[in-house]
Length: 501
Image (cartoon, rainbow, N blue to C red; front, side):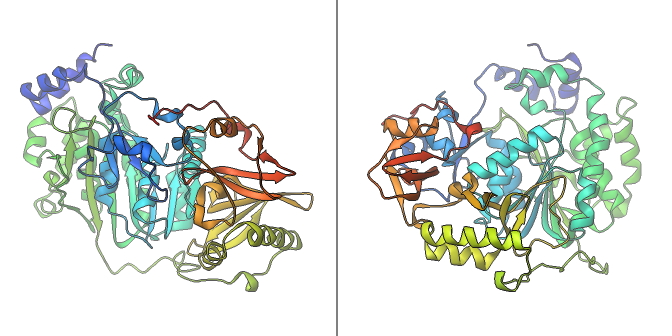
């Protein structure tokens, strides 16, 4: 598909003729691809041949230099790796998550950055992943499950609807904003068809609203990363300038990510301002001399497909400075407070389900895993599902419409009986269970299991974890030598061993 003429005019005007022809020269090349290894999983020998070329700005990430359909491999189903466009990993590198922090991924689907944040946090702390579109949010929840996350809350709400629960709560917020997707043109023809010259200014209004919500949920001294997968300066530098001009207690922090180029300067933006981009003209008028130090847009970073191993991204790091603002009452209702399960009042139904799950845990899980889970999470029943809710998640966050997942789903309870969840199975390692069905990569029984078939096994009755070279695939229940398959019906499908073995 041909590139939009107005896009060409914009690109040449903003970045110059040399950059435009460099972009065109590589436009027909294969898009950059990468995978990120899940640190919660043991690396299988079959994967090592792919781990030759690291992504310079992302930990545990490697360029993919072949066209193997890795998404259909059993190791992908078990969450050993996540397939992601390389430059899309840069925003999390800028965010620099730390274990124990509270972090919000505000525009999170399909989950690449969420799972990257969780890996950097060692799945310790509070991670809220939000997506406003229902179908995309379901994909987000599925990916958090596949990658084995235990301390993530998945929400399906407008950004402003989160503020009552999390005002001034988060140490860091990632806003990977919905945008015109100019960095997706090479891999997604639909993004070309949807582009028009008015789209950037239309998006900028929405992006500023999202940033304002992020600001209200960031604690003083916290940080916000703003990113897009587009090139134009309206959705990038202009949005940044306007946001910072309207919030006197924030500033841009210098970024120097590997292979990235600096953002456009304010002088460059002034030279671009005209009647075509009224938002840029209006924004520049808001920036006074006192704002220049806080608004130095060259502190942001850009990735281009011709200057880095990525399709294109814009990244900026914003610091919310410590001021005299009093903390919100929403902070601290549960933050940092550990509550013993035994001291928690519960309904008779909840108590029954907890006792049933405790019996399952004592028979199936390791003592160490079960003890640590109770030290860091509180058990809570919502409908038929028993959750392990992170202790530090505020009590103000309800089980309600728009909250898809509040921590780790442990089991489903029906008629005085429980079935352990697939999410729990994928959150485990071989060391976390008492019994494991160890299968090897290439064993046909792996494919049979993933299709939902039963297996003949020489095991005593009860639950066990099915693994492939140590990578969890799901639970099974042995009944008289037959392993009953607990792979969810919606996930059962035909997989193929893609890697050489």
